[in-house]
Length: 472
Image (tube, rainbow, N blue to C red; front, side, top):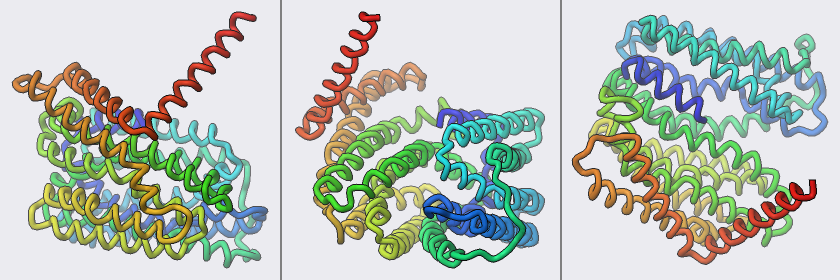
């Protein structure tokens, strides 16, 4: 996460917002096409017990064909996309970015096999190497004055290295194209996963498509970079939550009390980890933008504040889908995803008359007032977890977020009202916010007990380590 955050900050200081906006015009469509290219077949490979070589080979050729067709289609549509946005430079950019679909289509099944084999060290190593290399290329081209082509190169270097690396580390090779038994069931599973993902991807792309069309690449660049920066921690946190929560909850599905208790713990810890921190970020939005991005990005200040509000509730909203997946409620999950996507798109359309800030404000407000309650209600209509269980689990975090926001605002305006933002000031005010979070956590019996248990665990492990070192 730190590496990706550094990439966002450094490139934002080297390139103008319009460069990022130009790439986002294609990326907003690419997020949807990526799901079509994969068609949920990596998940099918990972979850199916006893999958055969013939089946994986068939899935490989399906992904490869889908990637090639989508890449070709995107390249052919490049002139139309450039005309839609009124950006002639977008035609060449789109044609080059289309190559990325071909490369990633050849990577899907090798990547899925690495995950199936639980070779997480190899996966992390390949991702890190690809990120570092693509970042270095982008920085070099940006310093050379190549503008948005630095970002195009970054988006091509990464999938090329991931393809080469995954084929090198994973020794599996596909057989020649041929039909295989059981493919229909795998495609059906993948289709269900894809349909749900497409609804979410479409909802997340509509705002960028409309903003780029209405206000051009400069405004879209501000909006897209702000979204990426603020939501980077959310995406980073959600991955391990799903990786750990899915198998743990699935094993407890026949033990309702233990299932309910574990899900409440997941929601409580996730909320405490995100809500108070993003409350502080919302209050310090102007300082964070100036320090990280520089004065050229001053227009992004209200966007950072509003997206921080959205980021405060998004992790728990997304974690509610664990209830569907661990209880085998895939049909209900698809319906819930479609409802949430409709609510999100309605919020985007409602905010358009007030500009890009109105869109961000509408998304934040609708999420807190409408999307979050609806998502909780739909997810808890069946199963051992009730909506009361969820609200009880997240209330300490809500309290901590409110107290942290108030404390940071008060200290900032009392001690730094006339001063320019500095890293030291941010750290000092942030420490005051953390102190407020600690007091709020200790005010609730359930979180106070968790802190006591954690303290006892750390103390006992410390004593054991000390005893072991003394004996040696």
